[in-house]
Image 1 (spheres, rainbow, N blue to C red):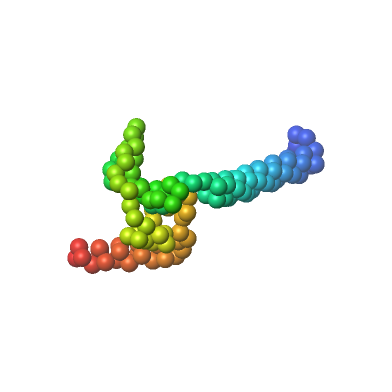
Image 2 (image 1 turned 90 degrees about the vertical axis):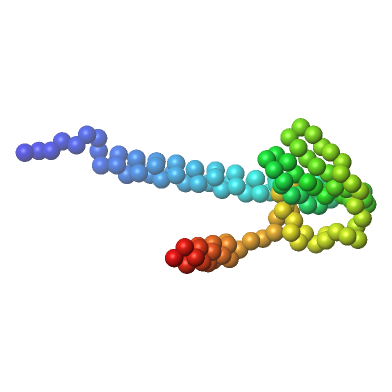
Length: 137
């Protein structure tokens, strides 16, 4: 009894090579998109932060779509309230009373993010969960 195969044996390897090449192209496109996005973000952040007279020093969320921000305009600092459709001037601040070393800064609006180690965050979460579990017992 003879078994008939559709196509030849070359077709199986050819299909595998096609799938492998498509997968390689897909990974290459993802890598290019990732690195180009990183490059453009660094380029824009450098242009905006270095050439601008206006910088958001720190922001703090006080409600849904409501923030209080410290803004540096020229050499002066101002406190403003940001809402969904309004910006309200609160007061002019003196630079002596401000901590300007990014301690406690949210980084959400000024583009400067402090580096966080994932292992530290995970260990803190584990410790908190184990402490919560002990408290409930």
